Image (tube, rainbow, N blue to C red; front, top):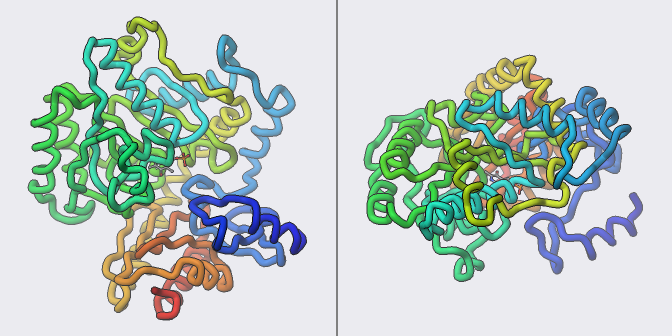
Length: 428
Ligand SMILES: *Cc1c(COP(=O)(O)O)cnc(C)c1O
C-alpha cells in the first residue's frame, strides 16, 4: 500500500466512530492468519480483539475458507423473497437445534444492529396483532445493542455514544444496571429499580431487552446470574416478552455456548451475530418462539414487514454452517476454559497496580478497568509497536482473543498490557 493510498484513506474514508477532521491513524493490514494480523511493514501482531468478538477460530481458517469457496462455485447470492437454498436451511436447522427448544423460527439479517431492529419490530407488531399499542421497551443501563435507531434507543442513554440522538429516539424505560457482579454475592437491592418500572408500566411495555450476564461495550460488566433469573420471573409474571442480545456473547465466548445458560433462563427472542460466521462475513439472526411468530402472522397485514436485500446470503450462511461445524468438535470448551484459567493466573494480579481499579474475567474475556482514561491513539500505537492489537476505550482495556490463542501468545497480550499500565504517558 502506497503512501498515497494511506493519505486517501485518511482523507476520504470513514472508519468506525471516527472523525473526518482529525482521524486516529489506521494501521494497514495486508493479510491475517491464525491469531496474527500482518501489517504493511511485514510485522505480525497478535489480535487480542478477534476483530470485535467475531474471529473466534482465528483468521484464514481452512474449514471456513473451504466452505466459502464451495458455496461461491454454486452462487454467492440469490434473493430470499420467494426463493430458498440449502445453506440457509441447514443453518436455520442448526440454530434451532442449538438453542432452547421453544425458539423455533429464524429471521436472518445482515448485522447485529438489524437483528435488534427486527426483534423490536417483531414485538411491536406482536402487540399490534393483539390489539394493543405497546411501543416502549424496558432495558437496563450500561447496555449496548447497536447503532441503528431502535438499537440506539435501548442502549445506555447517558453513557453512550448515542447521547446526541437522545431527543429523537423512542422513549424507552431504563432500569439501573445491576451492581452484583458475576462472581460476588447477590444483592437483591439490584432488582428494586427494574421491579418498580415493570410494575408501574406493565401495560405499556412491549418487551424487555438486555444482554444476558455480560454487558459489552456499554461498560464490560459481568452481572450476577440471579439478576437474570429474577428478570425472567418478572417478565413471566407480567406477561412481557424477553429479548436476549447474545450478539457479542454467543458461541462460547463466556464459557457457555450462550451466556444466558449461566442463569439457566430462556428468552422469547434471541439475537445472534458477530461470531456467527467465525469472523468471515456479516450475518445475524433473530430467533423467536412459534407463539410470537404466529401472533405476528395473524395480524391484518398477515406478515412480518421486514426483508433485507441480502437476507439469507448463501456465502454468509455457508460460513456460519462451517463455523458451527468447528464448534461442534467441542474444542471451544477446552480452549475457552484454558484462556479463562490463564487470565485468572496472569491478569488478576494486575489488580494491585495503582492505575487499576478492577479486573474482571469470564470465559475468554479479560477486562482491566483503570482509574484514569486511556489515551486511545497513543496506547493503541504502543500496543502495535509491542506486537499486539488491543483497542482500549475510556477507562477499559479489554481482550477477547481468538479461542485458538496459545499460552505464549496470551501471555504476550497480558505482558504488553502490564507494560502499558506502567507507562503513565499512555493515560489522559
Ligand atoms: C456489536 C453488537 C451489536 C451490533 O452488531 P453490529 O453487527 O455491529 O450491528 C449489538 N449488540 C451487541 C451486544 C453487540 O456487541
